[in-house]
Length: 122
Image 1 (cartoon, rainbow, N blue to C red):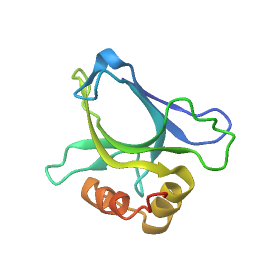
Image 2: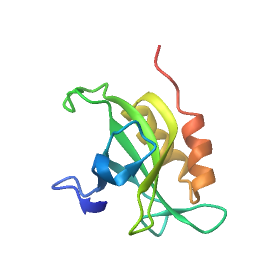
Image 3: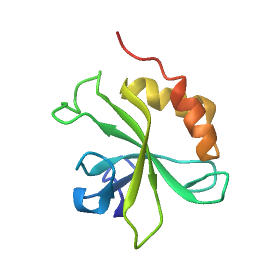
């Protein structure tokens, strides 16, 4: 698993290939990270660190204004498989980005609450 700064956008991306991801139907993760105030990782109630990312639906044209995807929470423990929780499925990136900007969650539980309120298209 790794994180990297997205070229040009100034954002942070998180990625893990399928062989490093557990319980996600053989899929890897690669998405734009949402950042809590003052850091890169969200902590859960036990103090464990998590990435919260938006991952585009495969085959989506990122130049399109209505990019769909999922908001995922990914474990951030090194030397272990990445575990993934789907916080919001099949949402528009513009709506997810707006929700995270407006509510500025600071914990994983806050992020899950924000994701639960993202409008679902259709």
